[in-house]
Length: 167
Image (cartoon, rainbow, N blue to C red; front, top):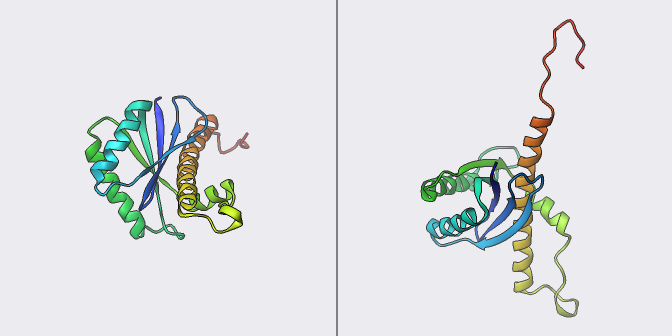
């Protein structure tokens, strides 16, 4: 198994998380600004993929609350197709439902700090907080994949005869 990279794709930023080879947990790694063109995103991601020996990229799919594919999910799906074409390497790209991950990330991080002298936060403080939320959301998406896979490996379905009670 090689490292996994988790992505929380936003309009302005891309939150990135990493689960190194054999790791049981994902950790927030970095946040990169979205490029004006997908090629900028691909170049930044390729650098991270090479540096960390990534074999799989997990991208959060922002489905609507009811599970439907809405405009934002369609935008993400189109971005992923361009990413696949642009990486030109043997990296698996998978998608994972990311509903509520930003909300969970915000609750984990707590409220945004106040500005100087207790006033409202500055633009810089808001931007830093949003970047932390994006990284944390990427880690939540990736951890969900790791937990699901570990659960599937740890508890395979045991076949039983119809006359026997399940174990």
